[in-house]
Image (cartoon, rainbow, N blue to C red; front, top):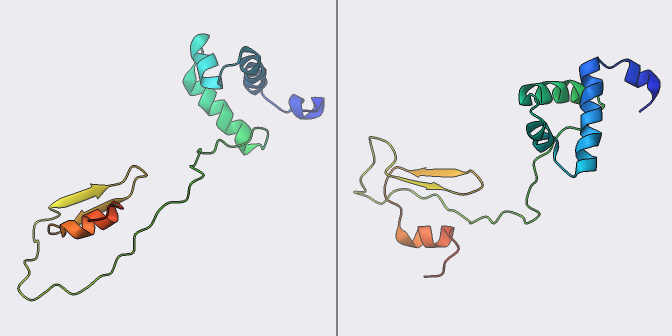
Length: 121
């Protein structure tokens, strides 16, 4: 970083960048470095956000799996005559580790659940 650009930073922002280098030299993540040295985690995130907004520090990105999600084909059909409708909310919820949720108003057919889970009956 140029001295001119460094001069535009506040003292706290300059210290943040110095601590970032120290953490790298110690082989620690920045949050681990702050914890190990008894520094304020709130200040870490506040100053980091300021530096991201200024374009000095890249934004943190979530580590996503390189494997594509698996989708299951679903067909929506009319309920058969005489099927009971749920009136009080879901009776079954299916939650995937990635975060999606399916709430069913009636108990799903076991065959459908097996297909959803990728199992062969």
